[in-house]
Amino acid sequence: MRQFSYKPSLLALAISSVAAYSSLASAATPSAIPQLSEAKSSVLTTSCEGLSSLLSASNTAINSVETVTKGTVKLGDNDVEEHCLVKGQMYERIGDVDGKPYAIGFELRLPKKWNGRFLHQANGGLDGAVRTAEGALGGGPLTGALFQGFAVISSDAGHDKGIPTFAYDPQARLDYGYQAVAKLTPMAKNVIHQVYGRDPDRSYFAGCSNGGRHAMVAATRYANDYDGILVGSPGYRLPLAAVASIAGAQVYASVPNTDKKDLKTAFTLAERTTVSNAILAKCDALDGLQDGMIQDFKSCQAAFSIQTDVATCKADRDGSCLTQPQKDAVDTIYKGVTTSNGKRFYSSFPYDTGINDSDHIIWEYTSPIERDSGAVAMIFSTPPVELKDYSIRNFNGADFVWKANVDELVAKVNAVSGVYKESAMLFMAPPTPENMSTLRDNGGKIMVYHGVSDAIFSVQDTEAWYLALDAENNGHAGDFTQFYPVPGMGHCRGGKATDQFDMLTPLVAWVEKGQKPKQVIATARGEGNLGGVNEELPSSWSATRTRPLCPYPSVATYDGKGDEESAKSFVCDVPKDM
Image (cartoon, rainbow, N blue to C red):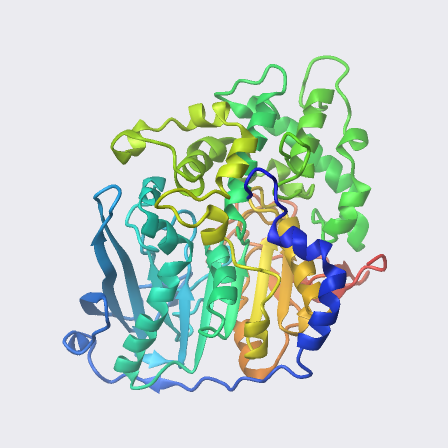
């Protein structure tokens, strides 16, 4: 987001300056990225409770240390082994602006059988809660970092409630954006050293959504602290995405006969299903098999047009067609909303099968009012909107959205004012996201995944980032970074997708053994799945369907002869037109 002279984003500058970068990237790219050694395991024989009087760290209060017995924490039907749970907080203080108490709350889980690795678990949304430090990602995860023997930390990022009023405090803004990680990382490694008698051999960072943003920030700001970064559905330009969400709601509200109190009247579930079916009709077979999945999402964008491939209503709306104003509104949102001068300020979104999924609908209709309004008003706008007593009870999200001027919102998320010394795009976004040379030169690796049907953070925004990174590295981003679009998946999980997968294990193998992944196998969560059933799956699918997730730009393509429900029948190939 920008001051309203509409300065181009860092990413746009990166893309527009590829030629200027090429010679620099060629010189900067090392002939050989160093290979890091494998972590070594240790066994903790001391009782957890016996550690209470031994642990200390600067600016840190250790509140408790306790034993967590095997099976207390589970992933699916897998029992997490016995471990120590350390709870505490850092940098307790009283806010200068609102007079409220602040601290960085955390929990650190330390396995008795430690694999020598540390993982920083970044959480989603507005943070504000210390979630269980298990380091598990993907839909219905059956494994995770803690289960695999990592020491894992989780935090509330500097505020103890997941509501946006924390951001009246300038320091809480910065902690949420990036500074909490800078404070937690050395503390966690210090405690690990005190417990096991040595530092972690390898350190990893992982998260999805806002957690994916945290991960991309860590890959740039804290590249010397981490060896492997796992990024899920990254809202790495979260302030822009939140403003785009509000702008999208305004576009839907402009459709004739739409009730602002019920935005789904602009584009109903039946109408969305008609569009989803039209997308499938055009794109399902592009990967060689009609199976209800679109593997080649890029080719689909060229093949499908909502204007010509969906019937235009000649009479009343009955769910089988769209009116011309509806088509224009939906296309405006998917091409990427703009400021009044016609400039797109966030990203386009791909047409995909998940346009009628329940999660997709919530992000487009409910979230602008109930989530993004408060985040934009209080966290991302500078100065934040004035509220009596800094209380969320005095904020009306719907009123904010319908009165909002998008041009002004774009300007405010790039502004600084008074005690707010950094704009939202400075404290939230990774600095120069296309430059991850420090992590690269240290031998670090990055794996990124993003659902193609994600309705709040666009997979095409992540694609644009990867292309800018590749340009910066003279076409060699793949030497240390992989990007996995997940067909049909919504935000972090769900959708008409094989969304159950483990990317941590291959990331570790790549970092520590040099084994670059060729694909990641993903499973559908049908009836009986131990991670929880995905209710969006079509009944025609096998409950245990598997597919390969392919590193961009390759696409999973059917071999024409094997079991249509098995990943073994697909290969990851780069489309001929790329």
